[in-house]
Structures are given as C-alpha cells and as structure tokens.
Image 1 (cartoon, rainbow, N blue to C red):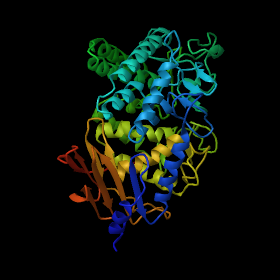
Image 2 (tube, rainbow, N blue to C red):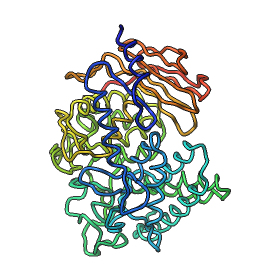
Image 3 (cartoon, rainbow, N blue to C red):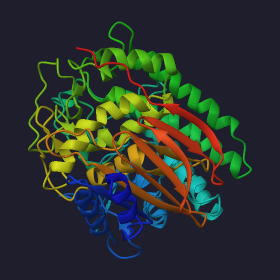
Image 4 (cartoon, rainbow, N blue to C red):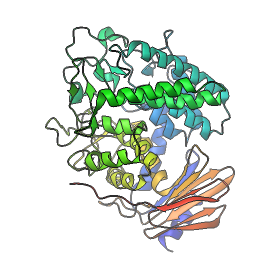
Length: 491
C-alpha cells in the first residue's frame, strides 16, 4: 500500500481531537500532535472558579492578555471556540472601575501592575464573532463596551507627553522580559500601578511602537464592531489614523528601516527587537513596505531569521544573547513571536516565506521532548518551561496551516499541500492526512511528497501539486488557487 493510501485509511479511523484528526505515516509528528492535543486539554481549566478558560501553561498560572487572551485564544478559536469566548469575557468581567483591563487573571485574582498589550484584542473578538457565524451579538456588545473603556483609559494614562502614541512605563508593559530594549528600566510600573511612571527615571516613559501599533489596529477593528452594532464607526477610524500618524512620526527610523521606542529625552532607543514583527502583525504598512522589511530584517540571517525561527533580538546586535534556558526576549526564539508571525505574513500574501521560516521550528518541535517557551536559534533545542500553550498551539496551527484544513473568519477554507516530508533529522513523514467537519460535510486532505488530494464526504474534489494552496467556499467552489513561493533568505 502506498504511503498516501495508508494515510487515508488510517485517517478514516483516527480519533478526533477538538473537531479535527491528523495522522502521519512515519516520523514523530503524529505522536507529537496527539501530545499537543492532550496537553492543550490540561491548559483548559477554570481560573479561581467559573467556566474553563485557556491558561498560559508552563510556569505561568493563569491567563495573560498579551498572549492567552489574544493570539493564543485566536488560534484556539478554530478548535474550541467556547473556551475562547469564555476567556475573552473573563477579562472583560475583571475590568477595573476606571476602565483598565487586567494584564492577567490568576487564581489569586486580576493583576493591574502593567498593561502588557501586544496582539489587538478587538481583532480576536471580531474574528471569533465571524468564525461563529455572527451568532452572539451579546458577546460582541459586552466586549465592545469593555474595549472602548480600555481605549479611553489608555488615552488618559498612557500619553503623558501628548504625542498621540502609547507609552511604556516598564519592561512588563510589552512582555519583553530580559530584553536590552529595557535595560535600566523597572520590570513593573511605579508602585505596582499601571497608571504611574517613575517621575525620576531618566528615560521613561517610552513612546512604544508595538503598543502604539496595537492601539491603531485595535481601533480599526473597533470600527468594524461599532458598525456591526449599529453605531458610528467614523470616530474609531479617525482615532486609528491618529495612532498610525503618531507611530510613524515618533518611532520610525527611515535610515535603518525599522521602528524604535522614543525615550523621554526625544532619542530613539536603538535596539532592534521583534518589535518590528509585532508592528507588522498589527497590519501596519502596505505590501511594498512589508517586502522591504522582509528583505532587510525578517528574512535576513544576520538579523532575525535563524534556522529555527525568528529571534527575539537582531543577531547582529552585540547585546544578542541566545540563552534559551530562561525566560528571555534578549535573543532566543520565543514561541509567542512565532505564533504572532502569520498575522503579518499572511496579511501580505507571504505564505511561502512563512513556510520557509517555519520548517526549522516544526522540525525542532517534532523532535522535542516537551512544549517549551523558547528554542535555541542555532540547534533548535527546547528551552525554558514545558506544557506551554503558545508552543502547543503553534504546532496545531502549523499542521493545519501547511497540510491541513484551515477555516477563515470570512467563511472560506484553505487547503495547503506542504506535507512535512522534507523535514530533517528524522522528523519527516512519508505521508500525512487531516480531517475536519464543516457544516456537516467531512473534508479530508491527504498528501505525500509529490501530490495531495482533497476529498469531500469521501469523494475526491481536487488534486494539488506540492506547494499549492487552494481556497474554497463551504460548498466546495474554488475561490483562489496558487503555488506558494518564497524569496531566498538573505545572508
């Protein structure tokens, strides 16, 4: 029996997890996928009572808004939308009277010592609403009210210099633990209160590009939500444009082609970190701008493209520290950055480059003994902590993105024929299969190194060559078809 036929036969008897099934003939990937599904289940549990929520996992007991409540929950939405909904609503329920949403929710209560914003919550909320067929307007209205109040809080407390940007008062405001970006800055805000900055600090507050881009994107999606709820979207769009203008005016360095913090003296803090990828993941810039950022930074092996993912600091910075055995954003590959990357790459039609950058990460995770926060950028060795939901979800996302069936908020389905048959170090499979039920129809994708086949309710719908991606509507009509290609990494 050919490997692709074996994959299909095994797929049809495979037990599903979170509504999908995956099999691999040969290699460790199926076992690791099943382990990811099992460990994800352990990350879904109540926090101090109430409904089960997504927990960050690893050493992090609770849910963090920069990750658990946003990008993690957004990926989880394709597998357990009810948990995503409950996680979002918990952050809204714990909102402080003055409008500040907690940066974390733990068994001991909410935390308010920093803001810790990266991925726009409003985009995650909007996508959840669309993925669940616009069925829950009460949820949408609740989250809209909470996010509107949070926006007002940020405008009141995080623009002390009147630039229109959003300011960082401490390291943890951006989650950039141990990054040279925040050398000499305190970890938490002054006196443990997110509205306070140390008045005697020589550099703080920073006008922060990632925080400012976050709010710009957040306001863009708040406009969409306002329209859906029958409210005026124009004020949100005007505010989004004001945030973008502040981002470019305060944080952009044209000579180096990147974004930097601007400190209280008006100087740029010239540390090249994954801030650039964060800003791009907030949908800043057009296709030409992204292409330049790709050439100069993200796809450059002296900058951020390591053999095992995007580094958290530029590798040509003398302060780069690849120590992957601790919680550090000073160099090692962090899975949160990898999980955020598709929002930037796919937005600009750069799935081919994302696939190239992801292969070493997939190999490393397929061979690892756990789901860590960090990887060694040189070897791919697993680093800090284990049972960490961002790396668990990264694997589930990667399997679905490159050789699975991925549902999109607009109702379309994408099928990509990049089976993991060319991974190194014994991680490769001979053939793989993936199954997902959508609107009562059973979709299957099976593939080997040369070809892949899409089936609907057991009947072949179309064949794909290696590297092809097809978008279908839910009835099976072809919306688009392309072959993913990539520029070469720069050296």
